[in-house]
Amino acid sequence: MVNVMLSERNVYEDFDLESDVLYFKVGVQGLVSFHGRNYNIKKRMTAEQLKELTNKSSFYQISSNCYINIGKIKTIEGGTIYFGSDISESKRLTVNRRKQYVIEQLFSQRSANKDKRIIR
Image (cartoon, rainbow, N blue to C red; front, side, top):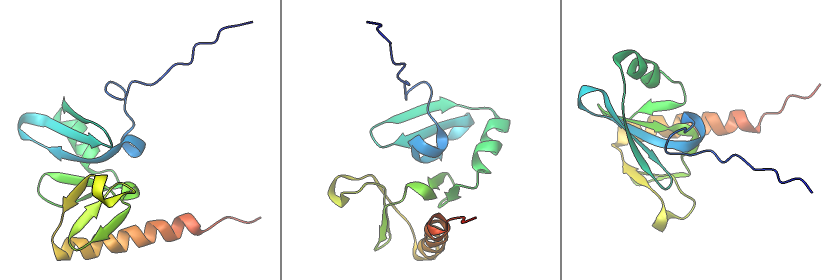
């Protein structure tokens, strides 16, 4: 019998922006706070890394320092964005009406694109 050790990915050291991060906030002097489902991680980043991070198409800026992952939104209701399946236990952010409308449009476009299948 051969024992195979499965390599688990340490989310705190090696996280994937697209799949792990719900939203992030940019602080002073390049300090970025990443918020996932069960964690918050702070990392210091250079100006180049910040520019690359904030230009990602899957993230949308909802305030001067906060960017949300459009693909991780579960529902948008009454000025609040919910990231989990159960509203009572999910992470959430408040957003103004104008931003909520834009996010709803982006959210519906993204889900419509997921429904399209390429048939050959």
